[in-house]
Image (spheres, rainbow, N blue to C red):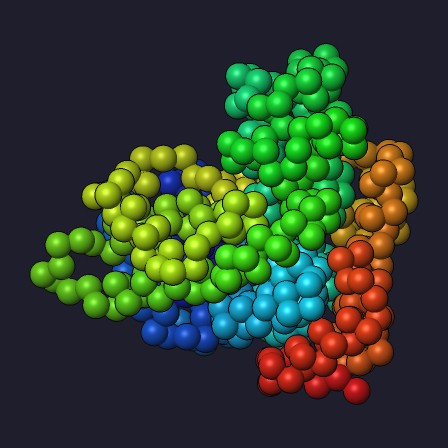
Length: 468
């Protein structure tokens, strides 16, 4: 099996490669190709990947290579993972900062930030897919590129069928609940529904017994990442357990104030951490006391330690990236322990999907696929985020049924926003783009929507479609 990682110079790549190598024999994996337009970043990430490969003595036969040649990369591919960022982290900074200038949430996937990233990404990923259809028409495509649901929707709308959208947020939510209940995750069933980064749990069962009330009564089970991002009291009143990204809808004013008070967006912090990582990787030599894998693990710990902290607790802007890095350096003196761990996050989700579709380990997991009646208040061809059964014959969504009123309106509004965003990108239509931003629940009015759109057009330059 040949796997191609598009955006292979990105910071997710080593974790995905580690997961693939851990199960390479079972998968029949013999080749991994990293594809990116930035050869310098590819060289740096390959240092980490190569150390991971060398740690698996049984996997010396897996050929790992990198290239900037898309056609060469896709030839004979069995599975392709997309994890790209058009315009790099600098464009994400623009995505997040412009809405904040108008008191609107600035976030990579949610609201105007997700709109801008989608507008930049859709034309590029569709170009890639034309080449995939030409040279690897039977390959499965796993989309990890954000905003994952919207991009997967665009690919489905373009007629591509073997497409699966992946996000680790729903699995993180269910795993946190299982841990709080001190129950094996495998014994629990979660009735989850929604769109990517806009989902809820409405029922939980343990060995076919409904334990939803028990979970709602347990404050710890309603926490995310060890803290109450959304108040347990509010969750109980909502009568649904929200994905953590609902924070941006239910507490948008608080989030905007926290980010503005800190003087630092998430993208700016990630940019600083990226600069530290790639500087260290570029300057490694044979005499370096610290290897590439250890530097990478310090980066991951720094990044994870800062997740959602700006939006919930606030950070002082001054030297925060350096402080996070130095703290992680105290904890991690050897990065090799990543090899002994079960893959987590995106890597774990991707690995489970691959094992499922290859018929090795059929499983049930939450994915982004075509609705086909699973959520009654959305269209058949809408991409939704729902529990799916995955086996060697394909991906099958599990019907959720009636959607509670407290979620239905928001769900439908954001899906309409997604449809208009895709139309705006396809038609290069200023009017459709303005309509999309205007109807998004996080944008207060049409005047603000137009200001945000015009600023994106001015700041993003050639990365943004030339709207008419």
